Amino acid sequence: QFVQVERAGQAPAALGAIYGGRDRGSIAAPLGATQLIRADVVYIASLGCAAADITENLTGKIAVINRGTCTFAIKTLNAQAKGAVAVLIVNSDATTFPIRMGGDGTGINIPASMINKASGAFLTGLAAGSYQISMGFDTAPRLGEFSGGRGATDTLFGLYVAQAGVYPIRM
Image 1: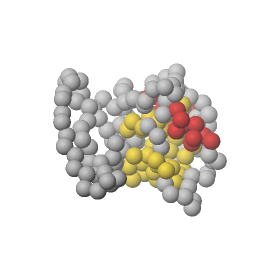
Image 2: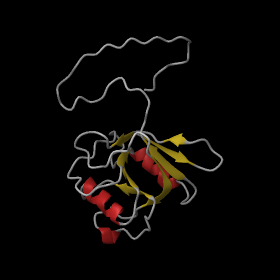
Image 3: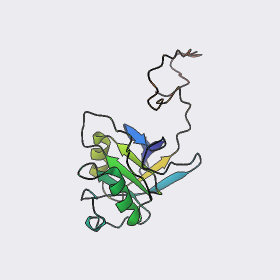
C-alpha cells in the first residue's frame, strides 16, 4: 500500500519506509484494491496502550502512534474505539525498517501500517490541520513478495529499458 502526505498547494509527498498490513499474520484489515482513505491526522501524545489514555478526538481521522510498551493490536483497537479510520505506528528505532505488525487482530476493522522513525518525525513536525494523509492499495507491478518462510529462492528478471532514464518499474 502507499501512504502519502497531501498539503494545499503542494504535490503529494510519499512517506519514506512503510510496511502495510496486507499479508498473512498482520493485525490490520487490508485495504481493498480500489479503497482510498484520505483523512486529517492526529498525533497521539500517549502510547495508546489504554483507550482512556487517548484524549484526542479521532473520529474520522488517521491516528499516528509511537511504537512501544504494548502490542500493535492494542494500539490499533484503542484508536479504532475512539473513531480512527486508520492507524500509522511510528517505528521507535531509527536504524531499522518498519516491520509486519503481527499479533491477534481480532476485532480490528481498520487498516494500520508502520512507518519509519524519520517519517514519524516529519509528520509530527507539520502543523496540525495543515495536511491530510492518503492511504491506498499500491497497484504498481511487483517483481516478487516475501515467500512466507518457505526458504530462499533465486529469481532472475530480465529488464528492457527502451529509453535511457525511463524505467518501467518502481524500486
